[in-house]
Length: 432
Image 1 (cartoon, rainbow, N blue to C red):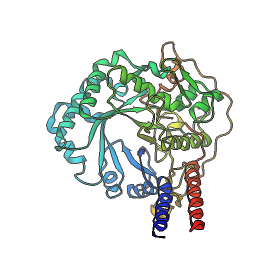
Image 2: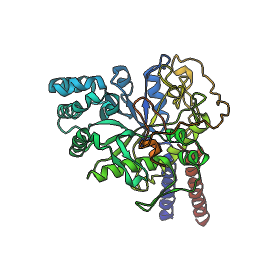
Image 3: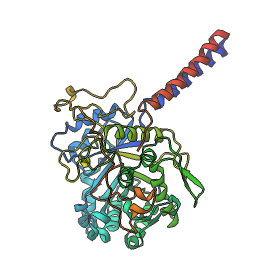
Image 4: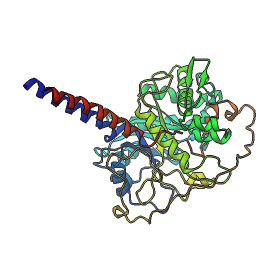
């Protein structure tokens, strides 16, 4: 009898473990917290909102003390940004780097996992290229002894000269003067290569139904890579593996890839094919399901790449195309823009009572659009490189990214496993 009781207790433990992934934070899922807006709720409300999700990491583009302190005690770690404007000073003065670390990296909470020195520097301001690695080195040297904080920089997909098929991934030779010392620094310090892949741009360049399905993790025929013998079923994996191939070709198999940005706009201008609520929901929920599957990519299976989804809120002050302003997974009323699968079981976001936010704005899908006429990319550009090459046009001024699994798929999967475990538990009781 005692032995049977122990078996029942073990089964109950299994049931709880089966339920755990649907409620616990996941180390490979993060989110970008942009602030180019005039209507955002207080940082403390955003921190509480993200605690109601399975998101465990937040990327900031700066070091606003009010935002950083809001995450103290939440268990959410931060990827901080030293701005492009900080680079020259950090590169020229170790004392300035020490002052930056002392001012911006908390000694205890919240935890800081990584500092990104600049954002897409090689394309946003090429004049800073020669100062990038010296700035990173000075900042790294200024960290306390035995610090676990990594120092890196965020790169646009434009660093690739080739990406189709993914096995042909290679960096642009003209960037080697900066990239070679950068990669050596990352390898020496155990820091990740940060990249911004956006499958959304692939669909803009090739607005066919089969391209959309490939970008949105929807059923498709797959795209074989003759160079590796691998087959790709989604654009996200193809983009990540193109970067992996480029790193491997340089001899840096030890350098980890972290996706610093990826997302899909839920609204855009009339000529922005695919910027709809339905597609944004499909991309984000499908990406989340893909990451939770722990399948990894065809080139690096069995481990999900750490991924920061863009973004917490829409940013109404961002310049450029309309899509730039509509990447928010959440509204400023602290409710989801669309179901993502990120909220923990039993939660539905936070109501407006948590912060003096504006009333919820309903998001209406844009009207059906005719197939846009896409201007052909110039010969030799990344946009004409093919399936994963189409992903490469992530630029310093445009941010964007694919998936169709139902937002509740992960929860349903774990519920089914729970039911199965419950069946065996009931069967065991009948035997007692």
